[in-house]
Length: 243
Image (tube, rainbow, N blue to C red; front, side, top):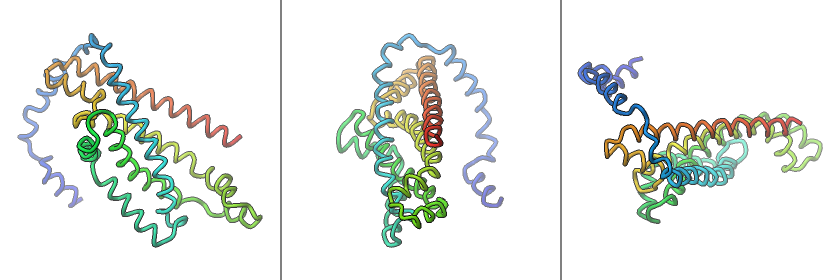
């Protein structure tokens, strides 16, 4: 509690002056944003596709990179000398904010969705690698040991003993990260990666709050669809696995 109180005080949470005009400002901003303006919806298709492409590509690259790194980082699957190095590398990847990765890659490869893809991939690899490794470390070794005693190969153990245990959590984490990357791709539009984020910030800069609200609603709808689709895919894969 002492740490929490000190943190709140340092951040200004207990400063009443900071809240004096906050509610009135929020109400005014909401009033200026209603009703949402969808007049330019025909111009949002390409930015929306750019954002979706960045999130899909960045998440896919991160998954392919994170899984072998997680196998090396997990204390029950990788050698001790390698695990420490890999865990330090994953920590470095996720310690650098996605926006900083975006600035670096915009300088390296130019403007457009590509630096956004690379930025999302780097940050997501660090996060997914850590989470995948933690999932692997909590695998119950008993089913694998039983199969190993019957001469089952490593691949068979992975398929029938390890995968059924980790698949639900892997899917949950991966789809959650994809949802996160849709929102992160929006932020990366501020540093030159384009997409729907650039449209939102342009609307705010031009004081087109009604259009900005409409764009935010579109983004909310996209994330909701991804969440619903991910839930359906998880359910079907788990049903097939149990079948």
